[in-house]
Length: 411
Ligand code: ASP
Ligand code: MG
Image 1 (cartoon, helix red, strand yellow):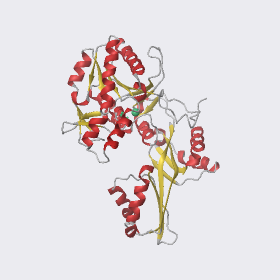
Image 2 (cartoon, protein in one colour):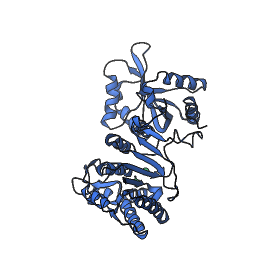
Image 3 (cartoon, rainbow, N blue to C red):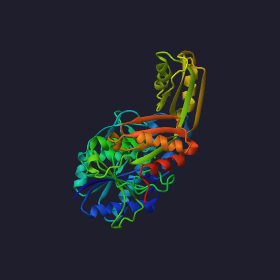
Protein backbone atom coordinates (compact mmCIF):
# COMPACT_ATOMS: atom_id res chain seq x y z
CA UNK A 1 0.00 0.00 0.00
CA UNK A 2 1.23 3.45 -0.87
CA UNK A 3 0.13 6.98 -0.28
CA UNK A 4 -0.39 8.84 -3.53
CA UNK A 5 -1.25 12.33 -4.63
CA UNK A 6 -2.66 12.43 -8.17
CA UNK A 7 -2.98 15.65 -10.13
CA UNK A 8 -5.16 16.20 -13.19
CA UNK A 9 -4.77 19.29 -15.37
CA UNK A 10 -7.37 21.32 -17.25
CA UNK A 11 -7.61 19.15 -20.37
CA UNK A 12 -8.03 16.04 -18.21
CA UNK A 13 -11.11 17.53 -16.52
CA UNK A 14 -12.38 19.50 -19.54
CA UNK A 15 -15.92 18.11 -19.37
CA UNK A 16 -18.08 15.78 -17.33
CA UNK A 17 -17.11 12.68 -19.36
CA UNK A 18 -13.46 13.36 -18.74
CA UNK A 19 -14.10 13.91 -15.04
CA UNK A 20 -15.75 10.46 -14.97
CA UNK A 21 -12.65 9.13 -16.70
CA UNK A 22 -10.48 10.75 -14.02
CA UNK A 23 -12.65 9.08 -11.38
CA UNK A 24 -11.91 5.70 -12.99
CA UNK A 25 -8.16 6.36 -12.75
CA UNK A 26 -8.61 7.28 -9.11
CA UNK A 27 -10.79 4.25 -8.40
CA UNK A 28 -8.13 1.97 -9.85
CA UNK A 29 -5.61 3.27 -7.31
CA UNK A 30 -8.11 3.01 -4.45
CA UNK A 31 -8.98 -0.56 -5.45
CA UNK A 32 -5.27 -1.38 -5.41
CA UNK A 33 -5.31 -0.44 -1.73
CA UNK A 34 -3.63 2.97 -1.90
CA UNK A 35 -4.47 6.06 0.14
CA UNK A 36 -5.28 8.73 -2.38
CA UNK A 37 -5.62 12.50 -2.61
CA UNK A 38 -6.41 14.12 -5.96
CA UNK A 39 -5.58 17.68 -6.96
CA UNK A 40 -7.53 19.14 -9.85
CA UNK A 41 -7.22 22.17 -12.11
CA UNK A 42 -10.18 24.09 -13.48
CA UNK A 43 -11.77 22.79 -16.69
CA UNK A 44 -9.56 23.91 -19.58
CA UNK A 45 -10.29 27.48 -20.66
CA UNK A 46 -12.25 28.30 -17.52
CA UNK A 47 -9.48 30.18 -15.70
CA UNK A 48 -8.82 32.28 -18.80
CA UNK A 49 -12.50 33.12 -18.96
CA UNK A 50 -12.59 34.06 -15.26
CA UNK A 51 -9.53 36.28 -15.64
CA UNK A 52 -11.25 37.97 -18.57
CA UNK A 53 -14.41 38.60 -16.53
CA UNK A 54 -12.30 40.36 -13.93
CA UNK A 55 -10.47 42.52 -16.46
CA UNK A 56 -13.66 43.32 -18.37
CA UNK A 57 -15.30 44.48 -15.15
CA UNK A 58 -12.58 46.98 -14.39
CA UNK A 59 -9.09 47.73 -15.55
CA UNK A 60 -8.16 48.35 -11.93
CA UNK A 61 -9.19 45.57 -9.63
CA UNK A 62 -8.62 44.45 -6.08
CA UNK A 63 -6.29 41.43 -6.30
CA UNK A 64 -8.16 39.78 -3.41
CA UNK A 65 -11.32 39.84 -5.47
CA UNK A 66 -9.41 38.62 -8.52
CA UNK A 67 -8.45 35.58 -6.42
CA UNK A 68 -12.01 35.09 -5.19
CA UNK A 69 -13.15 34.93 -8.80
CA UNK A 70 -10.39 32.91 -10.49
CA UNK A 71 -10.13 30.29 -7.74
CA UNK A 72 -13.72 29.27 -8.40
CA UNK A 73 -12.85 27.10 -11.42
CA UNK A 74 -11.09 24.59 -9.18
CA UNK A 75 -13.92 24.64 -6.66
CA UNK A 76 -16.21 23.34 -9.41
CA UNK A 77 -13.96 20.49 -10.55
CA UNK A 78 -13.11 19.33 -7.02
CA UNK A 79 -16.81 19.02 -6.24
CA UNK A 80 -17.65 17.33 -9.53
CA UNK A 81 -14.87 14.81 -9.07
CA UNK A 82 -16.13 13.93 -5.59
CA UNK A 83 -19.60 13.40 -7.06
CA UNK A 84 -18.21 11.25 -9.90
CA UNK A 85 -16.26 9.12 -7.42
CA UNK A 86 -19.25 8.68 -5.13
CA UNK A 87 -21.28 7.60 -8.18
CA UNK A 88 -18.65 4.88 -8.77
CA UNK A 89 -18.96 3.74 -5.17
CA UNK A 90 -15.77 5.40 -3.92
CA UNK A 91 -15.85 7.42 -0.70
CA UNK A 92 -14.76 10.97 -1.50
CA UNK A 93 -15.14 14.61 -0.52
CA UNK A 94 -13.95 17.94 -1.87
CA UNK A 95 -11.47 20.25 -0.12
CA UNK A 96 -10.91 23.92 -0.82
CA UNK A 97 -7.53 25.46 0.00
CA UNK A 98 -8.80 27.22 3.11
CA UNK A 99 -10.38 24.06 4.48
CA UNK A 100 -7.10 22.15 4.58
CA UNK A 101 -5.66 24.80 5.28
CA UNK A 102 -2.98 25.43 2.67
CA UNK A 103 -1.42 28.66 3.90
CA UNK A 104 0.11 31.21 1.57
CA UNK A 105 1.72 34.60 1.80
CA UNK A 106 -0.25 37.72 0.96
CA UNK A 107 0.86 38.10 -2.68
CA UNK A 108 -2.61 37.73 -4.16
CA UNK A 109 -2.54 36.45 -7.72
CA UNK A 110 0.88 34.83 -7.37
CA UNK A 111 1.04 33.71 -3.76
CA UNK A 112 3.77 31.43 -2.38
CA UNK A 113 2.91 28.46 -0.18
CA UNK A 114 4.07 29.03 3.39
CA UNK A 115 2.87 25.81 4.95
CA UNK A 116 0.27 23.09 4.88
CA UNK A 117 -1.46 21.73 7.93
CA UNK A 118 -1.88 18.14 6.76
CA UNK A 119 -3.56 16.60 9.83
CA UNK A 120 -7.18 16.70 8.65
CA UNK A 121 -6.22 15.64 5.16
CA UNK A 122 -4.10 12.74 6.38
CA UNK A 123 -6.90 11.55 8.62
CA UNK A 124 -9.30 11.66 5.68
CA UNK A 125 -6.93 9.67 3.48
CA UNK A 126 -6.24 7.14 6.22
CA UNK A 127 -9.97 6.61 6.68
CA UNK A 128 -10.16 5.58 3.03
CA UNK A 129 -11.90 8.71 1.82
CA UNK A 130 -10.44 10.22 -1.35
CA UNK A 131 -9.57 13.88 -0.84
CA UNK A 132 -10.57 15.84 -3.97
CA UNK A 133 -8.56 19.03 -3.60
CA UNK A 134 -8.97 22.29 -5.48
CA UNK A 135 -5.52 23.11 -6.86
CA UNK A 136 -4.12 26.58 -7.46
CA UNK A 137 -5.52 28.04 -4.25
CA UNK A 138 -4.85 28.53 -0.57
CA UNK A 139 -5.60 31.01 2.17
CA UNK A 140 -3.54 34.13 2.86
CA UNK A 141 -2.58 35.77 6.17
CA UNK A 142 -5.64 38.00 5.68
CA UNK A 143 -7.80 34.86 5.78
CA UNK A 144 -8.85 35.38 2.20
CA UNK A 145 -8.51 33.11 -0.81
CA UNK A 146 -5.14 33.42 -2.53
CA UNK A 147 -4.12 31.87 -5.86
CA UNK A 148 -0.65 30.60 -6.70
CA UNK A 149 -0.13 32.04 -10.18
CA UNK A 150 -1.08 30.55 -13.52
CA UNK A 151 -0.36 26.85 -13.81
CA UNK A 152 -0.16 26.69 -10.02
CA UNK A 153 -1.98 23.44 -9.44
CA UNK A 154 1.18 21.44 -10.27
CA UNK A 155 2.76 23.24 -7.34
CA UNK A 156 -0.28 22.58 -5.14
CA UNK A 157 0.00 18.87 -5.89
CA UNK A 158 3.70 18.54 -5.16
CA UNK A 159 3.43 20.64 -1.99
CA UNK A 160 0.53 18.52 -0.76
CA UNK A 161 2.43 15.34 -1.61
CA UNK A 162 5.32 16.57 0.52
CA UNK A 163 2.98 17.59 3.35
CA UNK A 164 1.13 14.26 3.59
CA UNK A 165 4.36 12.30 3.10
CA UNK A 166 3.19 10.74 -0.16
CA UNK A 167 5.31 8.04 -1.76
CA UNK A 168 4.77 9.62 -5.14
CA UNK A 169 3.01 12.48 -6.91
CA UNK A 170 1.46 11.40 -10.21
CA UNK A 171 0.89 14.29 -12.61
CA UNK A 172 -1.65 13.30 -15.25
CA UNK A 173 -1.52 15.51 -18.29
CA UNK A 174 -2.22 15.44 -22.03
CA UNK A 175 1.15 13.94 -22.97
CA UNK A 176 2.57 10.63 -21.82
CA UNK A 177 5.71 11.96 -20.19
CA UNK A 178 8.71 14.20 -20.60
CA UNK A 179 10.39 14.12 -24.00
CA UNK A 180 14.00 14.74 -25.00
CA UNK A 181 12.62 17.73 -26.89
CA UNK A 182 9.27 18.87 -28.29
CA UNK A 183 8.16 16.08 -30.69
CA UNK A 184 6.31 18.62 -32.81
CA UNK A 185 9.64 20.21 -33.66
CA UNK A 186 11.83 17.11 -33.70
CA UNK A 187 9.88 13.99 -34.68
CA UNK A 188 12.74 11.82 -33.43
CA UNK A 189 12.22 12.99 -29.84
CA UNK A 190 12.00 10.17 -27.31
CA UNK A 191 10.11 9.87 -24.07
CA UNK A 192 12.50 9.62 -21.14
CA UNK A 193 11.90 6.92 -18.56
CA UNK A 194 13.59 8.99 -15.90
CA UNK A 195 14.96 12.49 -15.53
CA UNK A 196 16.70 14.06 -12.54
CA UNK A 197 15.15 16.95 -10.63
CA UNK A 198 17.93 19.26 -11.68
CA UNK A 199 17.58 18.47 -15.36
CA UNK A 200 13.80 18.78 -15.17
CA UNK A 201 14.17 22.14 -13.48
CA UNK A 202 16.37 23.37 -16.33
CA UNK A 203 14.05 21.88 -18.96
CA UNK A 204 11.03 23.59 -17.38
CA UNK A 205 12.84 26.90 -16.90
CA UNK A 206 14.20 26.86 -20.44
CA UNK A 207 10.95 26.27 -22.26
CA UNK A 208 9.58 22.74 -21.76
CA UNK A 209 5.96 23.29 -20.71
CA UNK A 210 5.03 19.97 -19.17
CA UNK A 211 5.57 20.98 -15.51
CA UNK A 212 5.44 24.36 -13.80
CA UNK A 213 8.93 25.45 -12.73
CA UNK A 214 7.93 26.02 -9.12
CA UNK A 215 6.50 22.53 -8.82
CA UNK A 216 9.84 21.03 -9.88
CA UNK A 217 11.71 23.19 -7.35
CA UNK A 218 9.32 22.03 -4.69
CA UNK A 219 9.74 18.37 -5.67
CA UNK A 220 13.53 18.74 -5.62
CA UNK A 221 13.62 20.38 -2.21
CA UNK A 222 11.30 17.84 -0.61
CA UNK A 223 12.54 14.87 -2.64
CA UNK A 224 9.07 13.98 -3.89
CA UNK A 225 9.23 11.51 -6.81
CA UNK A 226 6.97 12.88 -9.56
CA UNK A 227 5.58 10.61 -12.26
CA UNK A 228 4.31 12.37 -15.40
CA UNK A 229 1.79 10.35 -17.40
CA UNK A 230 -1.23 10.78 -19.65
CA UNK A 231 -4.81 10.87 -18.42
CA UNK A 232 -5.87 9.66 -21.87
CA UNK A 233 -4.44 6.20 -21.24
CA UNK A 234 -7.34 3.83 -20.59
CA UNK A 235 -7.88 3.71 -16.82
CA UNK A 236 -8.02 -0.09 -16.87
CA UNK A 237 -5.03 -0.66 -19.17
CA UNK A 238 -2.60 -2.85 -17.28
CA UNK A 239 0.34 -0.95 -18.68
CA UNK A 240 1.15 2.67 -19.37
CA UNK A 241 4.02 5.00 -20.13
CA UNK A 242 5.39 7.92 -18.23
CA UNK A 243 8.48 9.71 -16.97
CA UNK A 244 9.71 9.60 -13.40
CA UNK A 245 11.31 12.81 -12.13
CA UNK A 246 13.63 11.66 -9.37
CA UNK A 247 17.02 11.87 -7.70
CA UNK A 248 20.06 11.70 -9.94
CA UNK A 249 21.38 8.60 -8.18
CA UNK A 250 18.20 6.71 -9.02
CA UNK A 251 19.12 6.93 -12.68
CA UNK A 252 21.38 4.14 -13.80
CA UNK A 253 22.37 5.18 -17.27
CA UNK A 254 22.90 8.88 -17.62
CA UNK A 255 23.46 10.58 -20.94
CA UNK A 256 25.85 13.48 -21.18
CA UNK A 257 23.02 15.54 -22.64
CA UNK A 258 19.50 14.47 -21.66
CA UNK A 259 17.37 16.96 -23.51
CA UNK A 260 17.13 19.98 -25.77
CA UNK A 261 14.82 22.80 -24.72
CA UNK A 262 13.94 25.94 -26.59
CA UNK A 263 12.11 29.15 -25.76
CA UNK A 264 10.69 31.49 -28.37
CA UNK A 265 9.57 34.10 -25.87
CA UNK A 266 12.89 35.89 -25.70
CA UNK A 267 13.79 39.31 -27.03
CA UNK A 268 17.23 40.70 -27.73
CA UNK A 269 18.42 44.22 -26.99
CA UNK A 270 21.75 45.65 -28.11
CA UNK A 271 23.16 48.92 -26.87
CA UNK A 272 25.74 50.25 -29.32
CA UNK A 273 28.49 52.65 -28.40
CA UNK A 274 28.26 52.36 -24.64
CA UNK A 275 31.02 54.09 -22.68
CA UNK A 276 33.59 51.46 -21.62
CA UNK A 277 34.11 52.51 -18.02
CA UNK A 278 33.29 51.18 -14.53
CA UNK A 279 29.66 51.41 -13.52
CA UNK A 280 28.14 51.12 -16.97
CA UNK A 281 26.76 47.61 -16.53
CA UNK A 282 25.18 48.77 -13.28
CA UNK A 283 23.66 51.76 -15.06
CA UNK A 284 22.13 49.46 -17.69
CA UNK A 285 20.92 46.58 -15.56
CA UNK A 286 20.06 48.48 -12.37
CA UNK A 287 16.97 50.23 -13.76
CA UNK A 288 15.78 46.98 -15.40
CA UNK A 289 16.12 45.09 -12.13
CA UNK A 290 14.31 47.88 -10.29
CA UNK A 291 11.40 47.32 -12.66
CA UNK A 292 11.54 43.54 -12.07
CA UNK A 293 12.62 42.80 -15.62
CA UNK A 294 14.58 39.59 -15.71
CA UNK A 295 17.71 39.81 -17.83
CA UNK A 296 18.97 36.45 -18.98
CA UNK A 297 21.88 36.26 -21.41
CA UNK A 298 24.46 39.05 -21.43
CA UNK A 299 27.30 39.61 -23.87
CA UNK A 300 29.65 42.55 -23.67
CA UNK A 301 32.07 43.04 -26.53
CA UNK A 302 35.64 44.14 -26.06
CA UNK A 303 35.99 47.70 -27.20
CA UNK A 304 38.29 48.21 -30.14
CA UNK A 305 39.22 51.73 -29.09
CA UNK A 306 39.07 51.39 -25.30
CA UNK A 307 36.37 54.05 -25.20
CA UNK A 308 33.09 52.49 -26.22
CA UNK A 309 31.66 48.98 -26.40
CA UNK A 310 28.45 47.13 -27.30
CA UNK A 311 26.27 45.24 -24.83
CA UNK A 312 23.74 42.62 -25.93
CA UNK A 313 21.30 40.92 -23.60
CA UNK A 314 17.91 39.20 -23.57
CA UNK A 315 14.69 39.93 -21.73
CA UNK A 316 11.34 38.10 -21.84
CA UNK A 317 9.51 39.09 -25.05
CA UNK A 318 6.56 40.23 -22.95
CA UNK A 319 8.82 42.83 -21.30
CA UNK A 320 10.49 43.99 -24.50
CA UNK A 321 8.56 47.24 -24.91
CA UNK A 322 8.89 48.13 -21.25
CA UNK A 323 12.63 47.40 -21.24
CA UNK A 324 13.15 49.66 -24.26
CA UNK A 325 11.23 52.43 -22.62
CA UNK A 326 13.22 52.18 -19.39
CA UNK A 327 16.52 52.19 -21.29
CA UNK A 328 15.30 55.17 -23.29
CA UNK A 329 14.64 57.07 -20.10
CA UNK A 330 18.05 56.10 -18.70
CA UNK A 331 19.88 57.16 -21.85
CA UNK A 332 21.58 60.16 -20.24
CA UNK A 333 22.97 58.03 -17.41
CA UNK A 334 24.10 55.16 -19.62
CA UNK A 335 25.35 57.24 -22.54
CA UNK A 336 24.88 54.88 -25.47
CA UNK A 337 24.80 55.75 -29.15
CA UNK A 338 21.99 53.52 -30.35
CA UNK A 339 19.52 50.92 -29.10
CA UNK A 340 18.60 47.99 -31.32
CA UNK A 341 16.16 45.25 -30.49
CA UNK A 342 14.48 42.23 -32.00
CA UNK A 343 12.06 39.52 -31.00
CA UNK A 344 12.95 37.18 -33.88
CA UNK A 345 15.26 35.15 -31.69
CA UNK A 346 15.04 31.81 -29.93
CA UNK A 347 17.04 30.40 -27.06
CA UNK A 348 18.05 26.79 -27.58
CA UNK A 349 19.55 24.86 -24.67
CA UNK A 350 21.24 21.51 -24.19
CA UNK A 351 20.76 20.12 -20.70
CA UNK A 352 22.42 17.25 -18.89
CA UNK A 353 24.02 16.44 -15.55
CA UNK A 354 26.71 14.56 -17.49
CA UNK A 355 28.19 17.92 -18.52
CA UNK A 356 29.68 18.23 -15.06
CA UNK A 357 32.11 15.47 -15.82
CA UNK A 358 32.50 15.63 -19.60
CA UNK A 359 34.41 18.28 -21.52
CA UNK A 360 33.80 19.41 -25.07
CA UNK A 361 29.99 19.46 -25.05
CA UNK A 362 29.87 23.14 -25.95
CA UNK A 363 32.64 22.94 -28.51
CA UNK A 364 30.79 20.22 -30.40
CA UNK A 365 27.63 22.30 -30.35
CA UNK A 366 29.33 25.36 -31.79
CA UNK A 367 31.03 23.33 -34.52
CA UNK A 368 27.90 21.59 -35.72
CA UNK A 369 25.88 24.82 -35.75
CA UNK A 370 28.62 26.57 -37.68
CA UNK A 371 28.55 23.75 -40.23
CA UNK A 372 24.84 24.43 -40.74
CA UNK A 373 25.47 28.14 -41.13
CA UNK A 374 23.66 29.07 -37.92
CA UNK A 375 25.03 32.20 -36.30
CA UNK A 376 25.18 32.28 -32.51
CA UNK A 377 24.26 35.67 -31.09
CA UNK A 378 24.75 35.02 -27.39
CA UNK A 379 25.79 32.17 -25.12
CA UNK A 380 25.26 31.32 -21.47
CA UNK A 381 26.27 28.24 -19.58
CA UNK A 382 25.83 26.69 -16.18
CA UNK A 383 27.17 23.47 -14.74
CA UNK A 384 24.52 21.40 -16.49
CA UNK A 385 23.36 23.47 -19.45
CA UNK A 386 24.50 25.45 -22.46
CA UNK A 387 22.14 27.99 -23.99
CA UNK A 388 22.56 29.81 -27.27
CA UNK A 389 20.57 32.59 -28.83
CA UNK A 390 19.93 32.28 -32.57
CA UNK A 391 17.68 33.62 -35.30
CA UNK A 392 14.17 32.19 -34.78
CA UNK A 393 14.06 30.97 -38.40
CA UNK A 394 16.62 28.31 -37.48
CA UNK A 395 14.73 26.88 -34.50
CA UNK A 396 13.79 23.54 -36.07
CA UNK A 397 17.13 23.06 -37.74
CA UNK A 398 19.09 23.80 -34.57
CA UNK A 399 16.92 21.65 -32.30
CA UNK A 400 17.03 18.67 -34.66
CA UNK A 401 20.75 19.03 -35.29
CA UNK A 402 21.59 19.11 -31.58
CA UNK A 403 19.17 16.28 -30.83
CA UNK A 404 21.06 14.12 -33.32
CA UNK A 405 24.49 15.38 -32.25
CA UNK A 406 24.04 14.24 -28.65
CA UNK A 407 22.64 10.84 -29.58
CA UNK A 408 19.07 11.51 -28.49
CA UNK A 409 17.24 10.44 -31.69
CA UNK A 410 15.00 7.45 -31.32
CA UNK A 411 16.05 4.42 -33.32
N1 ASP B 1 -6.42 26.72 -13.47
C1 ASP B 1 -5.19 27.41 -13.22
C2 ASP B 1 -4.64 27.98 -14.51
O1 ASP B 1 -5.20 27.78 -15.57
C3 ASP B 1 -4.19 26.55 -12.51
C4 ASP B 1 -3.71 25.35 -13.27
O2 ASP B 1 -4.35 24.90 -14.21
O3 ASP B 1 -2.68 24.80 -12.89
O4 ASP B 1 -3.66 28.67 -14.48
MG1 MG C 1 -1.08 23.08 -16.22
